[in-house]
Length: 137
Image (cartoon, rainbow, N blue to C red; front, top):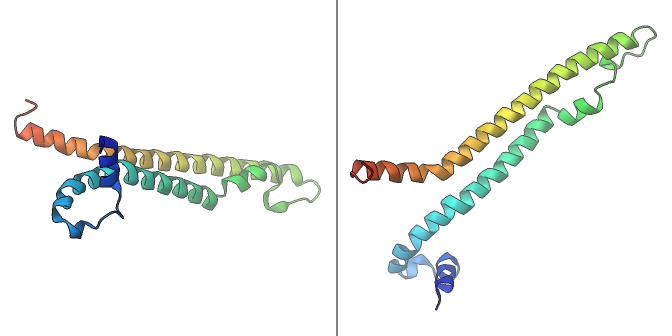
């Protein structure tokens, strides 16, 4: 049995329940924690981030604001008011778009920070442990 098969057997959850062999828990638990922390956690956070960004863009109606950017404000088509209504509409939509894009960028950066902190947190705690034991001094 090679190392690849051993790792695959440790990662295979359906092979044998942990409760059937308590010694298996000692071997499997660190592998499961690492798999969760480095594979499943960032994957879930990435999916959640994309969902959050799409939802926010939908709530702020970014695509609708872009489609109707040159349309007159409140559909004002009376003679003599079209140019004024278009100017007002473009101004309001412009500032709304800038604000919406700024919100999306801030949201994306915060989610990226969370993902980086998620991956880096164990390294931080291991570093503190080694520092407290005098290993890094």
